[in-house]
Image (cartoon, rainbow, N blue to C red):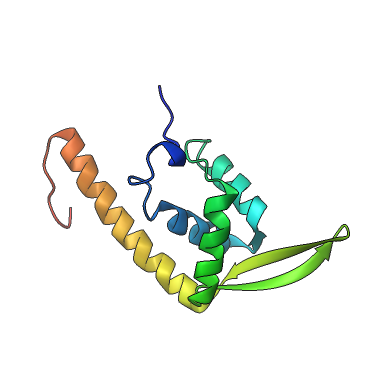
Length: 119
């Protein structure tokens, strides 16, 4: 079975990186590469996002107030840890609701049953 990779179908993946990053950061603060690895692991390597996707997203989410960051030295290197802000929690809740409705609707269509709102 072929695996879905973000780089092979970017239009399909639109919005998925933001949802995944916010969800991972709801549990604990993380740094960029750690987020890349966690997405890979949590999705069973079905979603494999490059650092070139994650870092611009982290910066945009921070600029938008969804994330906070702190710089710390680790083994002589500087590392930026990101955490979810209250605005980020609200955005995650919004995205979770949207994606839940979308996946429910798609599942109904795939099963050939049609979509029934609120079911």
